[in-house]
Image (cartoon, rainbow, N blue to C red; front, side):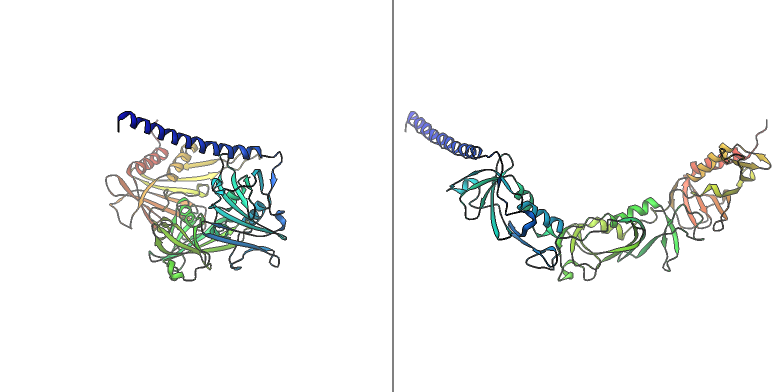
Length: 470
């Protein structure tokens, strides 16, 4: 075939394609124009009836068929296929409201080709009943303005529905379950107990730790096997730990009734967690979590006593089973209530000194009491003394260490307190290595602190108590 003839054939073919495209656009344009022409000043009511009269609603979304009915005796919505299935009443009422308020912005009658509206193979189907009326809605494709093409059972009319069905019914049974949830009325956590293969532990909040410690600045304690407080913990760090349980969002519900808990590793949970707390009404309460087997980075979990199984991030379980208690130690070993301080005895390289503290009694209620610090019958600068106490309170800890002797005492402070529980707190600083001193508090805990920070504390103490020659 000559080149000219070939070009003629191609041109003819192109005209055919262009014509087909123009025809398709013309049909689509006419379809949209027809719906626009049919738009009414007032929306068309295509609801099944008033929402308060809706008694049943069912739908099929990609093979997930759900059927709900209103049980008059129970005054609640139930799963028609299994009345024992827990249904979220708020969600069910929202579905009833949806089918009871359906409107269309326009309609095309006498439709023969439903395929052009996506209704030959609907995206999903919704059935609703109200009184003696039953309606089935076939939902097809969507329009550019967010509306959806809808057909009612037995009709050849296509409605431009405002999107209410698509908004509410593109869900499955999992989305209308009344799901288990971690309590939302927790006012204050009082204990966290974890039992697992990684080791058991119990943390408790103690308003009165007795003689277990030398300060009430750290009310959270890791307890020993007998339940007695064994080690104080930093409050912020404890909060991060227990929030792994209290802030846990149970998502991806696997089943609302685990007929075979072994399928999820919950016949013998690898970890059990119990949280004791006071609620918003100051009542004592608790809840438990059971963790089963891992699944692709997640872990199966359920509330104790429930059969509803969820998946959550496996890192939640990892954090609960393997906390680093050394890293949770108080970061300021000398955090004490200095308003109770009576005196501090100092053993410094320069000598031994004792500073006493007393408080003035205001003569007028408009006056505030003032601290008086005295060393060897000599009054000290109260602002300088207060700064030194703040420096002691803020002394940072680098880490906990096992009890050790160190290499000789360098300086010691013995704080006498107005407290029956902690009348005296002894703090020794010993040489340890090139960058740390060993800080021994009340012969209970051994901390490593910066040599620079500890030496500064000793130097400032010397400046405070040693009288310089005039």
